[in-house]
Structure formats: C-alpha cells, structure tokens
Amino acid sequence: MQSYQYIIDHEDRITWLSSSWDEFAGANNGSKAMVSAIIRQPLWNSVTGEETKYFYKLFTDKVRTTAN
Image (tube, rainbow, N blue to C red; front, side):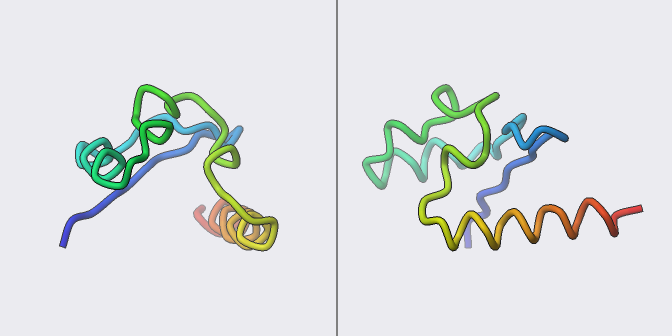
C-alpha cells in the first residue's frame, strides 16, 4: 500500500510532501494538488468541507499540545 505523507510548519503551511504525492495527484486528475502547486501553501487550502477542516484542526492542535 502506497503512503502519502506531508509535513506542516507551526503556521500550518505545507513544507514537505512524500515522493509519491505527485503520482497520486496525477492519477486522480489533481493537477492543482501537485507538489509545485501546494508546497508552502496553507494546509487548509487543500482540505474541503467545514466539518473536515474543523476535525483536522482539532487533531492538529491536540498533536501540538501533547507532542512534548
């Protein structure tokens, strides 16, 4: 199973994407999701749905507050 990973900074900007990211985006007609299009952009530009954004933000905040 292929893995699609990303890293965000403290401002929730995408700073790194796994090498398989473009392959996945291209296979799904996702030219707007290619690494060159989303690197250094806010993660939230790539998450659709207000409920989904809400839960991702909760998760992100929880990870940040318990990671130490």
